[in-house]
Length: 146
Ligand code: IDP
Ligand code: MG
Image (cartoon, rainbow, N blue to C red; front, side):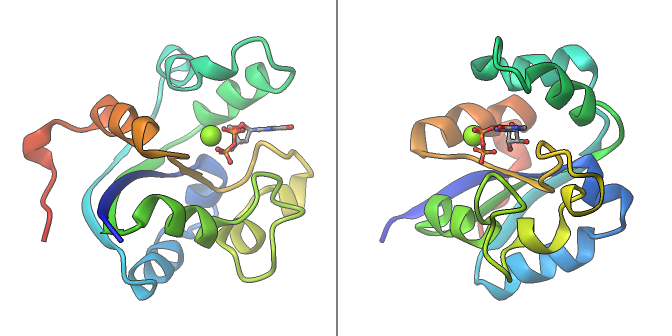
């Protein structure tokens, strides 16, 4: 398996409920390494840009409002097969259908609000996506592979 880097965002629902540490413990216990991280508050226009591929979908406007509703943690994870491995760890996009024990099943705001876009975590879906999403938030010198 190849060493890969992937972008993780801990979304406002999970940050506001104080789940940063619990989520990152699961990521580290899985064997992935956090090689860059920061907390920031996305503007509406930055959130629109990040999710531009979904423009026009019914959930786009509420998703962008949600993603700019409070601080997020953005981080780069590294590990063997990290892109797919991390997607497995977070579970299905619909957090109410994610398998028990996945991060989305355990930490999403949707469990309380029913809003499906509140699914706690973002993860790059493939290599090309990761290669575009990581520089959206980090400069090369901010990554610390180890
Ligand atoms: P992903 O985050 O699992 O890759 P995408 O299809 O790329 O899923 O969608 C991006 C984000 O948009 C999801 O994480 C979720 O927050 C939101 N989203 C996707 N599909 C729906 C939906 O059908 N209803 C509400 N929100 C959705
Ligand atoms: Mg996606």
